[in-house]
Length: 113
Length: 116
Figure 1 (cartoon, rainbow over the protein chains, first blue to last red):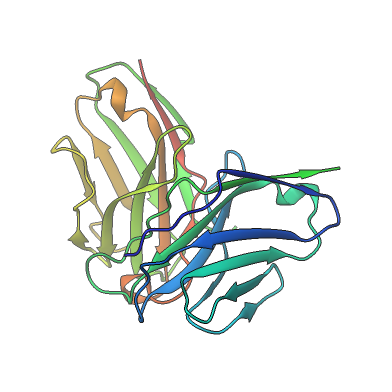
Figure 2 (figure 1 turned 120 degrees about the horizontal axis):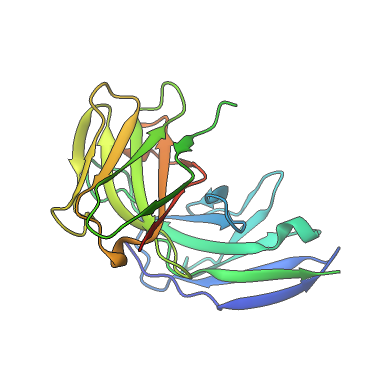
């Protein structure tokens, strides 16, 4: 699975959009981009995933560049409860082996009142 | 509560003791994963079950680590002769789809193991 690169930390003002970047320059054609977040002392929580097209759900939007070498997770109106570590993960098609997630160290997002 | 549950939430062990960590996945979920998360790091894969079959154990750090899921539901991660470097949060995740599928894995809250 492709390695991802994320900034170690970011701040965002409450109520503003939080834009979290991720580089995955070695991604291959059948690999998906996933985003998870982990609030302190909790297990990771799924946010969104995508292959080529931009995706939106009730939590966030995922923007994937046309060459798929980078992506951005957008939290449209950040709240204090969005303070967490955000992980960008690239994962290939599921198989009996090698289907685990490689989390890396993520981006620690702090939402400031 | 229909989520993944883990017990105990906290475990303190003396070096050399054996420990057993339990995971109750979401009912009906075929895939089950164990991860280890050291302080300040992201989770790292340990092992994967498809129903009762352990299909991937490539992440288990040593032969002191053993996992089972005998009836394809509850899973137990056992660590024998614990060492201080085993101190970490152990996370369990489950998924409805085979091999985790394309979609989310649901994580439990984790068990924090401290080895003294």
